[in-house]
Length: 115
Image 1 (tube, one colour):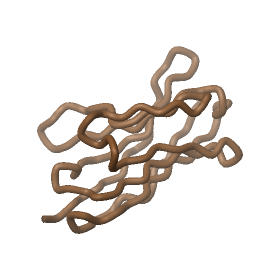
Image 2 (cartoon, rainbow, N blue to C red):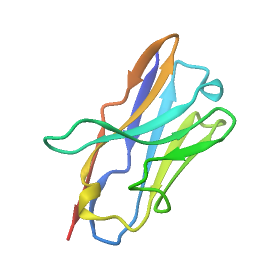
Image 3 (tube, rainbow, N blue to C red):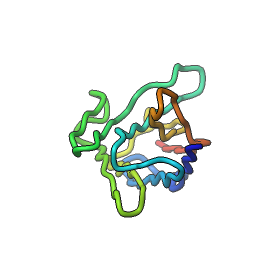
Image 4 (cartoon, helix red, strand yellow):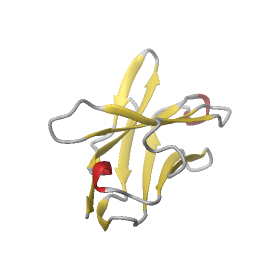
């Protein structure tokens, strides 16, 4: 059974920086693409960034150039470096992967950006 555990959220002022981590277990981490999603109050969950097993990256337009997704296969961990944070980035951030045809999610970590 896959297990994903996020950490690194918090309260930061606009323009600030946070680094989220997602430690995984129970899967052969290096062969799976990893995703970061976020869900703001009253909004649908949205895909923020993806990193494939080969290291290719994709971002939603609103974070492109400010966020960086990376992975460390030795530590079975995926990261999301978030720079130039804005109040509209406030959300619960979730780590996700699809393994054995199933979606697996972490518990989420709250990111709050004050203006």
